[in-house]
Length: 137
Image 1 (spheres, rainbow, N blue to C red):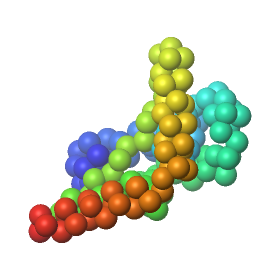
Image 2 (tube, rainbow, N blue to C red):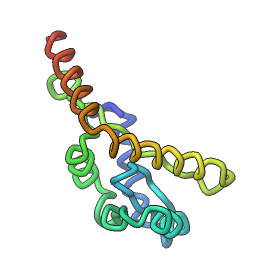
Image 3 (cartoon, helix red, strand yellow):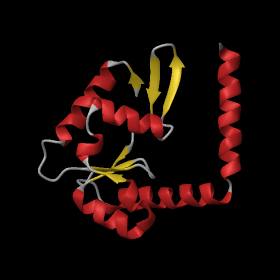
Image 4 (cartoon, rainbow, N blue to C red):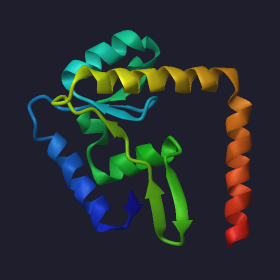
């Protein structure tokens, strides 16, 4: 998502709408995934280490909260002065079949396995991106 943009504004409206629902979604900051109430329980049982990383809508569903959380979890990239790119969390659609959530959970497993085995690679990637961005300006 490009911030500022109409797309960003629409996304913020959708985040704010989460607070109005009776079964509110939650955000897993480890997987960067928004889950409905039912998915939250399944996710917490499959990934017990994420329990402390699951935020309720009162903790993430406003523009300021979401941006702060995204920034803290390195999901914000400064594209140019006053223009930020914010990585949008994956959103599970309960109207679709279970294949989607299974795929997202497998991705989460792979992401954590890769992170556990080679955190230094992530540092190298960030370093390359930083130097690449520095060359552009």
